[in-house]
Length: 145
Image (cartoon, rainbow, N blue to C red):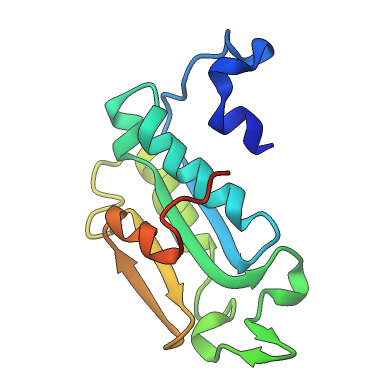
């Protein structure tokens, strides 16, 4: 899956596909088996999106969850991330609706006051809204192979 993100110009089947010109809301979990691809796709969109609006309109949310529903409460055998990690406190519905209001309904103010990146910081069990540049703090700075 990552092959088409990092080397699209080298994959014959993908050469004809135009770069994305729509904004994207990427959501992942720190324990999700696809977290690398989520972070990679977010970074690649910044670098390769087909319009300035698409680059500026991409958002990223990383929860302390796994890919399967059993991890949606933020409770794991070796770690409990507290009340702020669960669905009750951090529902994914509200960010989806705000994003859709902005990009599908055209409400210019729907995302006012939001940063591009929202991360659950596991060391302190708190949510943080971050500037786009802080995604690099999640590891090596590149999630792409």
